[in-house]
Length: 252
Length: 357
Image 1 (cartoon, each protein chain N blue to C red):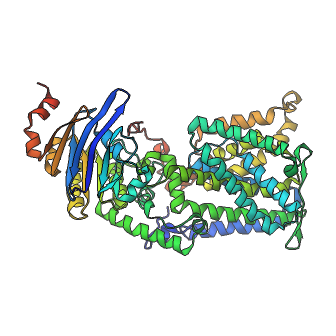
Image 2: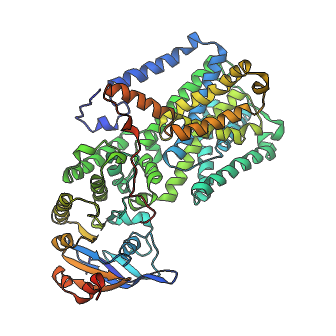
Image 3: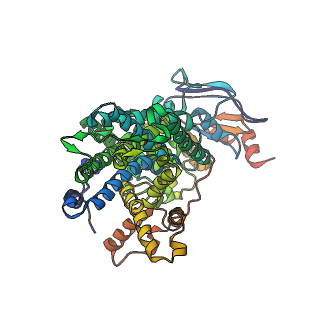
């Protein structure tokens, strides 16, 4: 069985079918990339997985559990974390606060213990911080702990968002265009990090990406979408030589 | 410039970040405690009122400044707190028992109102809370058994710890203690996961949700906590006024609270105190100015609301971070002197934000 499975998902906005009967499975420990031209339905797919959009039809399974009806705020508790295409960081908070929010799902304190900041609340903060520091070390964010997101360059912000997702200790990580807006060097670093997330942390990754050389370097399998339908799926080599994919990107 | 060498995580968790903080805040508390030695009853009364406004400001700040939800009807919570407190005292419940009940009642009222109303956002939420203010005012008029209606409700001034609330020095200390307690409570909430969740909701609901923050629950919680603080302020306000009438808790009081947090500085607890000092002393200042203005201007009845409005507009336009923001800038200027750059606080344009997810 796959770790994660999408079965016959259809999403319709009025008459437009953003996703049309899409099915695929992702195995544990895989880096699975979704490619496709603009408007192919890639981000819609992510938003369906994180339950922001309601699918018109179909089901999603994570660890053999149907999550099509799970509340959006419970998705991360199951172990699915995500980043956003256009960055959704908490702009007026420091990097540290952003990352600490990644630990929110492990909250044990209630409002009373927080008002009095009991020893257990303090202990919890320490535990949060330990995990956050691990991620900070992992992604080289030591310099920026106390900087407001407002004052950070774009590349670092992308990194912070990845870090925040990692702080939730996910089993499955959804990355929406992780390399967009990054310089060449940053993209190369990102490639190493993604490989490390897979091999060192054992996290399965589903990624939407446009940079094909980057995609071919890191992905184990690729799924190509166009107009909400699956064009092809398979190993990077197969996708590269697939006639339908070539046509969708380059025309006749 | 001060460089803090951090060796423990506790240093980031503690309220006082370094010995400088400890020194200055202790000094401030000492001065506040010593104030009755030098000030007469009138000014003590004014400062008690500022303490009460600050507590109410903390309530609204948590809701608007930290969770990003506007409220134009917060006087309703002041009213709930004041009437509940007066009602309980009238029925012989002692002060020390009444205050916790007031806090719980306002918390529950906040939650009960928050759960349905917070399905709205932005402008619609503002209008709904505005309506809430008017509805509350009407309830205070009509529910005569509880509030005395338009006849008003005298607030009993029982003895507490063997002292009378008529004694302005004692009342000043009561207000001060509650302000300090409220401040600590607010700081504690804000440095805990709940406070961070509030900030997350303010800055990006969608990201907050994907990190496991239950939006509905935390918005309602923010409304309830905000209500609890404001209700506490209302209870103290009842003692301060001495006689409750429904029209005290009108839209103008709500707007004063809004002015307080905007002028003080959105998103800072310091701002609530700065703002409270500002709106607390402003009417006195205007009253003094009236004497020096030509009578055609000085005796105009609408002078005060007009000035309030003007000041609000000027702050939003020229100092959106309020008095606290200005204070931070001045502090930084001296810390960096002479290398301070004007550009430091120019807001960087952000092109990445959009409605797309």
